Length: 459
Image 1: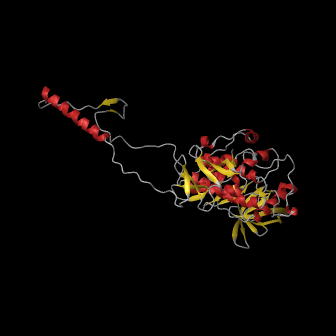
Image 2: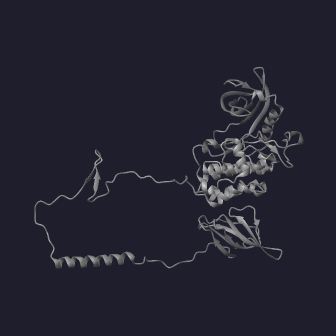
């Protein structure tokens, strides 16, 4: 049943249809009690008697309404009322004035800084949900809206699931457990464990965010597949097309984060979505401002600045017409004597030699100077990143001997490791820092990403 404008659903008056999804139809409506417009999601008639679908509709209301976060859509109301003799279940939500990420990506890849700003907000919203024990399970481009002010809103918690020991929901409020082997989600965004029907947790949302960030930067998904089955098979079996190939302009640090999110094994992704949000925020803050670089340069104009005895093309016939100096018809012709010709040649050679010496002379240089990069007085063992943007060094400025990182352009400094650490060295791509740590009476080799996060033991 489609609701016409003017239809009343509880305290709401339908104004227009906004969209049509698998679970229900979304309308723009007015709340007469508070005088505000809302998004009204109405469950489809054919699903109203399906206890599982109705339970998931209620779960969407419980999950979203319990997550009070600026990057998660706000739920105002949930109820079932009679409309025209039929029972209607509805969800009253915040009306988001903007467009979906699907519409944005449909116009092409986003500039690096904007893509990272959007991904950071998604990660912050997910972190809030994960810390309350809720996994979204259906994160995709069309379930993320961006307002006109650039605020990200995560929508549609219809497939949300409680994991672990959530402090949020009592057992009575928990949704019916997913049966073993059941697959819930959208092909192309589901993590491998989700496709295989295994138990999922917050790291499945991280995988979906990796797909989204890849799309924002490259304008395409990381895994191939012409149909849903092929897409799911590719996620489980194949490695993604490297982001460095799909979007060569993306820095190595960003590509490393995307690669980690798209790891097949959940334990190889982030142990905390809050850490992921921090990494993305750091990358966003150091990303260059402005639009994406153009792939080519176009030039326009005419050849009016070119002079000399050249051929031109006749614009009417296309024939080539030779342009030569006119013959002198009057006056005497000048001729040089042999001696004058020799003197002229000598003068020309001398002038050419003098000009060559002038052009090849060494440019004046100022004496080199030294400039301190860090100022604590207890810094040492510095190493500069391959792109010359970062310096890693050892410092005891806060009482703990560990690795610090400094941005040469902005000047900001921050600790990178926990300590006690020595000898930082950048990886060839500049995305990681290797260092040694004193453990058990000896030294152990570790590595960590330049954006921070988990420290991994190597040797």
